[in-house]
Length: 378
Image 1 (cartoon, rainbow, N blue to C red):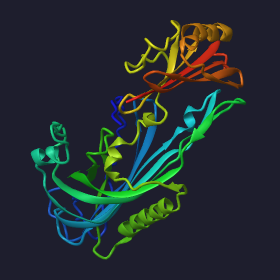
Image 2: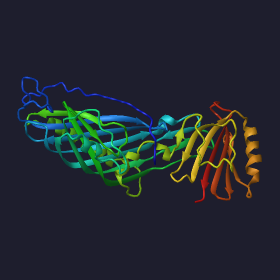
Image 3: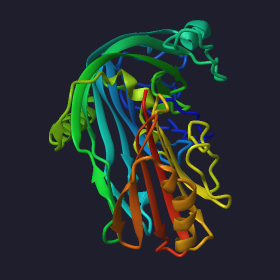
Image 4: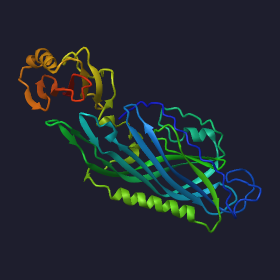
């Protein structure tokens, strides 16, 4: 799915203020500075969750747990070995309302095992251009970093897609999916370091910022920081393996940048939303006072849905659609009574199916609610 993003600035700075005993000199030299340091192990550590709110109102939590270590040396440059877990999670329950209860969402884990990369001197051009898609222009960072690493890592993992929508009122429609899918993909990663801060960026995960963590200098015989984070990654791996759900087809994880913006299933929610161009309003009329609160379109625009509230009474709305649409169909629609309303399944030339739902608004926000769901023939 393709999305435009709302501006969401969420800046969190980690302050590196501790001096590691046995590694730093007494004159308070910092790892990552150009001052002379004693021999020690160098650790890059990140454990951060970034919430990203997308245009459709959905907020996805992206979490990175990352650890890498270089054994020995008096500066940060050199070869590092480590691992990471990148998790993206959406809970759609916040969108439940008086009409529908929503649960689940998605929960995707991606793991990088046996990660190896070299930290070298910072080159703004190479850093900016690395990992961007063909035809796109990279945006140079405003910070003049000291060192960096750019590499491509195989990420393997699994994801659970389990959104479920349940109509609260008797006779309302309910449904959902529960699928587990796994796969692997080559994912570009770039790391920038300055003054004890580490910035890890996944160019294909479009969240508008980098994950932030620390550069640590630790005594050569101290593996506590590394071991602690590795244990956390292993726990996340066990959690991912324990996720329930039916098995779906394998799918690459390279699309992690497409997570969030869950409109592919639920669509956009709000008030006074614009009418989508793909909706055939010439064939299916829409009330003049319609306040559109939900819009859904699939990728090729063959399936489109709008839901709106109106100030007209239920009987008036039913009469409008009976006169201006239902009575004009060649085949009589199949009608099903639902709690507080009625559902019509319609056949029409050029369409696979048209569903018209009209009901009284139980929330009393509007007098009536209408849902128009159209599936076009390709």
